[in-house]
Amino acid sequence: MSTGERTGMDRLLPHWHFREVHTLAVPADQETVMSAVYEAVWSEAPLARALMAVTGADVSAQRRIVTDSLSAMGEVIPSGGDEFLFAGIQALDDIPRPEGTTAELVERCTEPGIVKVGMNVRFAGGVLSTETRVLATDERTRRRFRPYWLFIRFGSGLTRQSMLRAIRARALRQTAVG
Image 1 (cartoon, rainbow, N blue to C red):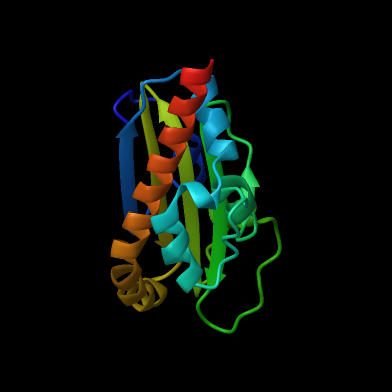
Image 2: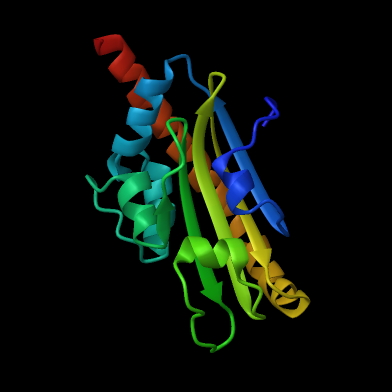
């Protein structure tokens, strides 16, 4: 981020092989925007909902996008008032899951065959953003993951942009009412 301050994402996954960032200006205060982050539902993001439905994800109309959907895929990590942080891991080989919480594994696991994922939704300086970082624990896993990343990146970007627009719209509605 342009402020130079360390985010929860910087602490969770300071290095990465793959990264995607999307931003959107939101003329509202932090409390309103972060409330919208936690409350936005799939019916408010029809493009994201349609794209995620293809993956088999539960995108029921009133299911919350960020808090319900992401927590079902990994671990939500408390990170402060301006950031929602999520950690996930995936083994590309048929290896047993290493011991530890998902956040611990993202921070410390070095066993081959693991892909570590960090994602945030953050509001700072009037900008709502989402960042995804992916780190493979070894070169073979990185090479194997790259085609998947290239395949999903466009759809993932559309999903994130749709999600940010839904959050902004909710925050602006809350600002207009308040």
